[in-house]
Amino acid sequence: MAGTPEEDLLAWLEREEERLGFTAVAVGLSDIESARNLFYEELGYDMVDGQFEGLREAMVTKYEEFPSLGISFSRREYPGGFQSVYRDKATGRFIALADVQSLLETIRGG
Image 1 (tube, helix red, strand yellow):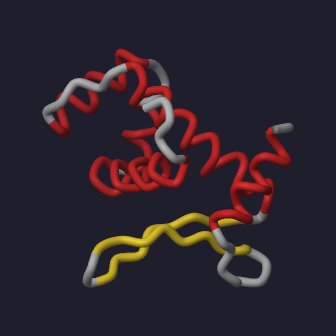
Image 2 (cartoon, rainbow, N blue to C red; image 1 turned 90 degrees about the horizontal axis):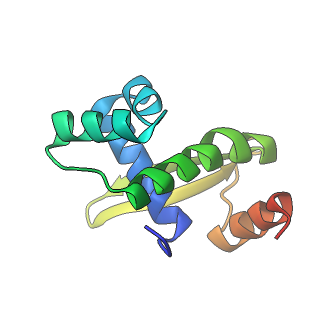
């Protein structure tokens, strides 16, 4: 999953949490073998190392970095598909992806 946009990883993480439940995904991503077992049993496919690392990074972003910045992430379903949505928790205003990426770079030191 190297090179996969962070927005796509967050959307993938959210889909898996919807399918399997937050607790199952959090526990399953505690180590690579647990993740492989969970995803094979529930979804019928073998998770590769890159997928595991990508989902773990997305969990850090969603559950550690976003809260520290006061940002929430969700996916909205529309007739033509899904849209990733970022919001400022204090004001409820939408935040552009470029602004979110800039804030993440700031806290990551990049």
